[in-house]
Image (cartoon, rainbow, N blue to C red):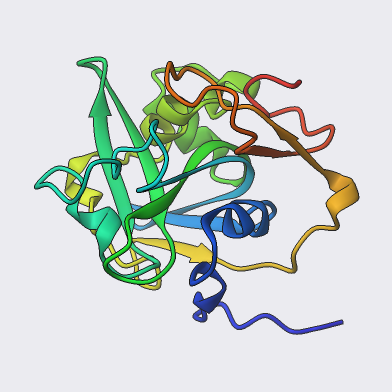
Length: 195
């Protein structure tokens, strides 16, 4: 079996759709007040500057500038006046692209996640992009964060076989809604909305 270097995020320097699939099964480790939370990524969506639904579409702005930076950084945005969502920047610097983390499965520290979600636990603790940001205490302070460093790291894992990945249209968008750019682990209970 191949060994994975937990500090090597070079797999993110690829086409955003390829990366969105490769992220499935990878882990995120968050440290909050000295306590570790670890989750597995189970659902993603891809976005880039050529995609009408992407924040990067139309060029670089103050809001989306992180998406045009180096791969392996976190792009956080505020939506609907109440929620945060997070993307992991992919590809070459200068080309705006990122992968939205849509859902994660708790591995370690689920009680901390429940508390961050004000007592909402079980599948609802992290089965949506805003839910997981609240559970992991991710807000605008984290935008631009280098995911090879604490207190929030992306830990690569071996890529899943295609047979374990479902590809569908994205959720909650009005533009480019027929694009097949949503990916999730087949049969995982934490997926936000199975196909």
